[in-house]
Image 1: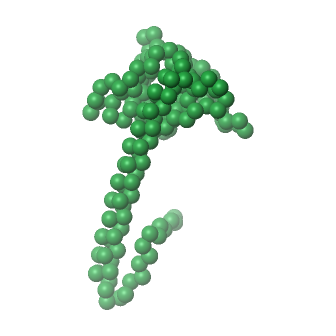
Image 2: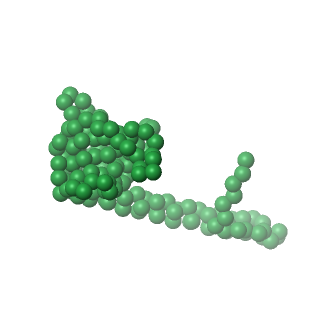
Image 3: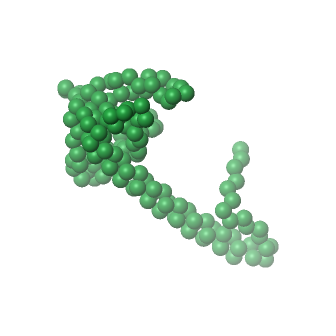
Length: 154
């Protein structure tokens, strides 16, 4: 469920990748400038310009753009747009605004890490249960069980 509006950033330039990554990284082309809203329980990004409103997905991470000496630009990765992960370059009106946005990215990364750790614990518990069930069911055959091993094949 949506918990409301977290933050609004005015006059944010949104740029899209212009092509494949090169030696110096991906080049970007400016798409539009407008208002960026951070909303919802997963830090959903909503971009508004004129009468256009576009969901950019939920924020998964952001990193500073090395070439930006002013510290106003961030490369932002999002999920949940239906096309997999998406990369945007956001340029804010000031370095302070970029830092404020980065705090939301850090929270998103921490939430993702916590979810991953929770799922990892659940997987380990299920694997332990399966190993115990196999030992019990096959006790008369002395099964070889290689815990923590993943098998791949066709």
